Length: 226
Image (tube, rainbow, N blue to C red; front, side, top):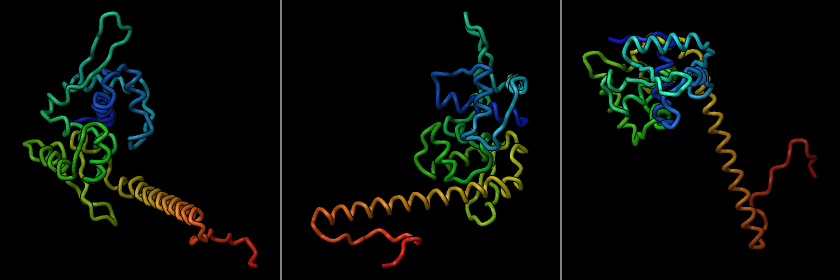
């Protein structure tokens, strides 16, 4: 069973992600790998890996057969590509889900569908579940199902290439809870904006018909009563 350390896990996730999302910029130079490993979006945790750490990680992946160095004629720097699909014997959709778990840690079916779909089309929750079942139903599983976060009923899934990559207790107590609260606040703000837009539309329609505004704006708390 191939087992990765934290830096190797991050670098492999980046190689798979970039191969699927920006194929015109792939394979990746060491500098591109450093930038991809440390980018602030689609990563948990956000890291600040130095070039030598990323170099050691991608060379570690080479030793395990998961990456290849590409030396192009006339190029001043070497580039790297992954061999994960062939070595792990996974389909592209399975590989996208695996990369998402490497980059962001344990997630629910809904989270994986929404996030991994940027790498490969995932038409339904059922498709995601089928891909995860394929990753789990192997002589040496690459993923497993884990309990929901406190206060949730949705089971989560984690990858097993780097099983200690995202401590489950820290995940439950910190970023995952904050993320849920942040998502709720965002949805509430979106609903408030939609209601305000509907109010403006109704008011405009009433004015065009010569009718009084059925939804006058609320008075400010500081506005004196008449």
